[in-house]
Image (cartoon, rainbow, N blue to C red; front, side):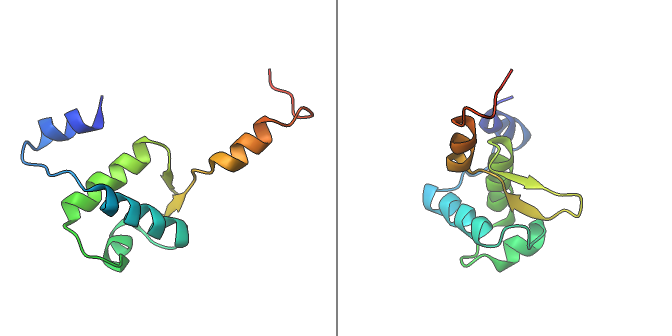
Length: 96
């Protein structure tokens, strides 16, 4: 289900984050890859925001495949399109 539609059904008063806020969270996660759990990451962000807004950003990043959560609950950045393109273009690594 579309994330925005799901959020509207769950909470019709949900507010959506601005682009600069999403980018700030993305950059912070990239810099601190695998260091923080969800709540600790929220507390360590350079700019404060409501936890609901932060949760929407985390849900978006999880759904789009940019971050993952390991067995310990720590959030890591997994979106590396340049590296993936490099490996996909190698002829010696055949795909079936």
